[in-house]
Image: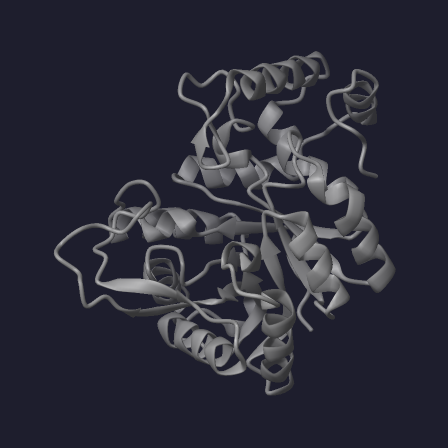
Length: 314
């Protein structure tokens, strides 16, 4: 089974999250990532109604399959929208010609993964996550989704199976159902340690792995001084901004950029094998790759903990 590289490039922005990007812009960021050594990519049907997967598949076409790790997600089927009247999708700048349909049944999960493979131009993915099961309102979504993925893993359509969620309970439930790996989105960061209480111990006990995603909490932890800071896809509250600035001050005292600390913090937890972060420019992706090797004194984590700002997770 292929080792998971410690840095993964998130691909929601390649589905035109919040604003449109051209194919050329997306290719430039992906090319910069590849040239910087990035070999771990995360996507989902949800991102731009399949646009992210199609763009990523186009970029990876012809590159040696054994050189990269790719993850996608199941749970949302993309089906034609008979009521489409020219409007754009909610959250993504793409025409809403399709709609998302929650489905965690065995047939639904199979269709979801097979359709993702077609968009990606691949015969298998390295990781398939049950996506946002707690948001679906579907009873037993985690249990049903993981069970369906087990069958697809046995058939070789995916190497690893898991759950991707912003809610720690869903991640812990996934581990108990037999997930090899979980993606903790937005909840194992300098501002949100929700995954520490239950998910990290559950993964350690089961021998499961964790990928920490959205480590910048939508941007606030990339630059706490930004005038229009975002936190978990919304405008950041004044309390969140104040705490981020307090963390930033401690980081600066130790000569560490806030974004570097944000990227590295989840990796202190033993079960965390990788962090995933998006990038909207060539410079951003290069900076994020460089942050993996930037020196960080251990005293920084001690000071953040001692000041009651961020608990140590390792």
